[in-house]
Amino acid sequence: MATKMDTSAIGGCNPEAAICTRAVTRDFQAGQQTITVLHGIDLDVKAGELTFLVGESGSGKTTLISIMCGILWPTEGEVKVFGTDIYDLSDDQLVEFRLQNIGFIFQQYNLIPSIDAASNAAVPLIAQGMERHEAREKAVAMLEKLNIGDQADKLPNQLSGGQQQRVAIARALVHEPRLVVCDEPTAALDAASGRRVMDLLKEVAVAEDRACIIVTHDNRIFDMADRILVLEDGKVTHDGTDMPPSDFGDH
Amino acid sequence: MIWIAIRMLTGDAQKFFGLVFGIAFSTLLITQQLTIFINLLERGASGVYNVSSADVWVMDPVSRTTDVAYAMPSTALDKVRGVPGVEWAVPHIRAQASVRTKDGDLEGVAVIGVDDATLIGLPKNMVEGSVDVLSQPDSVIIDDVGTTRMFPGQSPIGERLELNDQRAVIRGIADAIPSFTSTVVLYTKYSQALNYVPGTRNRLSFVLVGAENPAEAKALSEKIEEETGLKAQTREEFARDGVQFIIENTGIPLNFGITVALGFIVGVAIVGLTFSLFIRDNIKQFGALKAIGVTNGKIRKMVAAQAGLVGLIGYGLGVLGTVGFIQAFSSDPTFKGFYIPWQIPLISAAAVTIILALTGWLALRSVLKTEPAAVFR
Image (cartoon, one colour):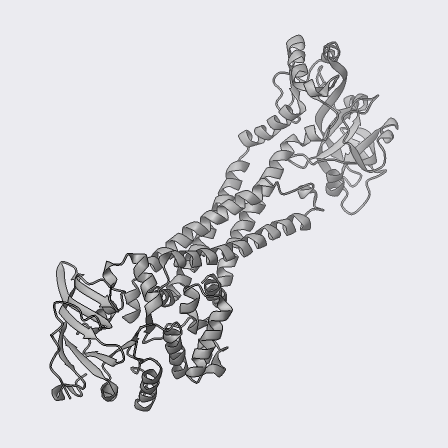
């Protein structure tokens, strides 16, 4: 059922919120013109929920997700991730924060083509300074959890698209981040495969102490969300457990 | 992360080998050309190096090198012998002549006349025969370069030559450093050389001097100049002048300089282009790494490791190539005695470092400028 937007926490972040944005605005320069992509977004995302960020192309969802995970500075506003005001951190602290707390699943996977699946999945651990063999063991364990442990020694180009996506999921989860961000995970998949990926993500990525945000416009999977945020022209126009009836099929 | 960087690089075999080739080619060009240049320059002093026993060379004040000498009157020898501190002084003549072989070939040669009694002025070692052969009539000793040029594939011993219309018989082969022009050299006694080389009233090219105290050769040369009015130089000074003469009077430094510069530019071009392509092809991966939480510092180290690996392998191959080149041509008289001075690999290493630092920096700029957010676009 659709619910009204919860504005009770606006003006101060709820300490229990996994992600809290207040008055987040983002402008881009296009020549002489300033384009405002996000207009004062106030948002709380809870841990333990699978949250969908939905919107048409150009609605600002990629900009918002980039700001929420600390890779794009807002023009104005405040962003707290598990209580940390991430844009108050220095550049190096922010990078370290991402490394420790956020897992990314990119639409195009962005796996390194010349290292095998296990090494790809181990990248965040290696970047954290873990010894390579130990990191690899943990990565193999994660791949086994995702049912592709037998593909650990294969290079990305020896894997199917679905297997590559699982490697990308393993890479996002291997270091046990508190926030998982997923960009269009089903965009290139048929309906059945898309649902399988979503089932998998629900199983492995959603946890009580972890927030999981999925950016998508795939209406075939909307029913799997715990919460759906609809973004239109840089504003959150809907916040509920399902899509507003008029919007079904439009995205 | 370094391991990942190396795997990223070696995983793209085409670009990896392109980068290695670029560095190897640059190193080879720079090292090989500098080696040839330095060795050729040193040949400007070969006439001095071939006479190892002389501490001081005395000559007419206008003389500049062993090959550019103005003859002195024979009385110069006595003047030099009269200078305190001179242990011995012997005459030395160097002149140009033409030789006709029995096959009718014409060859320009240098005739060097050494002291009749002591044979000072001959190279230290012989390839074949003994220095004593010069006591036989019409004897000459040919240098090994001359042997290869005039008698390829055969022994010159016993060969008769028509040397400026006089008979000369080759009875020995000297192991000598070739001259800058690789001219054939015939050694004979001073008295015999006067017969072979028609000339003016003055025929004495140099007086070779042994110092009572070789450590004070410089002081002795100054004293000789003071007392005789002739020009006297220590062995090292005269050798240096020979090298300087080539630098000042030939286009060799410019030509070799251009080639070395081309080696550098080609290196920058090949490596720069390939490195940029490699980075561009992997920009999504670098962007993803940055988003995940790899700092710019670590990215810099990754690119530095990639450049370092390429540099090490390419540089090693380039230097090995130069060594191989020198080895392969060591039997050719043109390259006889060529060696790689230790400074040259250092210069090449510096050039390679600059190439990699420059191209790596250019390639790195695009990585550092990439916003992590770009991976979501």
